[in-house]
Amino acid sequence: MKKNSVSITDPKLIAANAKATLETKCKTVYTAIDANNLSLPKFESFFAAFQGYEILKLQGKIVNEVLTVIDFSLSSTEERMWVIDMKTQKVILKTLVAHGRNSGIEFATNFSNENESYKSSLGFYITGEVYQGKHGTSLRLDGMEYGINDRARDRAVVIHGADYVSKKLARAQGYIGRSQGCPAVPYEVHKQLIETIKNKSCIFIYHPSRNYIVKSKLVS
Image (cartoon, rainbow, N blue to C red; front, side, top):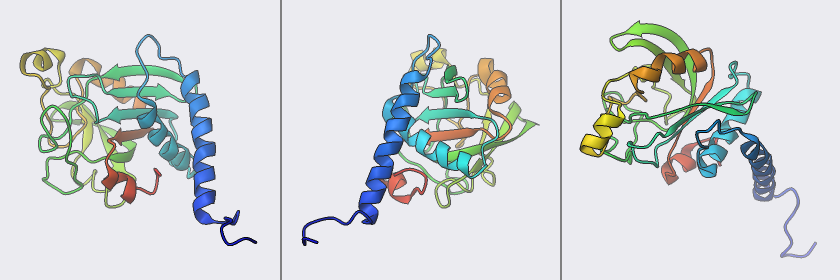
């Protein structure tokens, strides 16, 4: 073997080939999705979501085959949460979603897994149980990534409705209200959203942060 040749068992090459194969599969899925007169998330955010979704599905953690993508690279004035039925390959819902008050104002730029940080956490979540809380019908979340979002349940990071998540407020002040770290949504969609994504579906909160990509074992 020549010195400069790369062995086909080289781990970096195997990983690169696996990622390329997965990206091809993802592009096929992405182009087949019916946007349902709404829109699709950016491919970059969907590809990251798809990588983790496929792993968690293989691990048997996903029961309800719905993928929710939240793109925190976008302004909070934009509808940056997409709910996609992966069986029918159709966008079911698209809505505004809040980030934590200490993550940023219009844009989320700082993230944390710490209690009382009032920041959002990136990464993959599996939906837990529905309960009645101070915001009404709410949905518990379990973070799937150690050191990134695994304290979500302890931090009471949940899906809930909030009157501060509104287009009217976005128009008035240039950003929507912020949460204590929860991906809060408008009251007019929160019950439909929770009904759709309950029972162990997958949520992915995306941001093109190098910190996240380096730490994550679900996205490469």
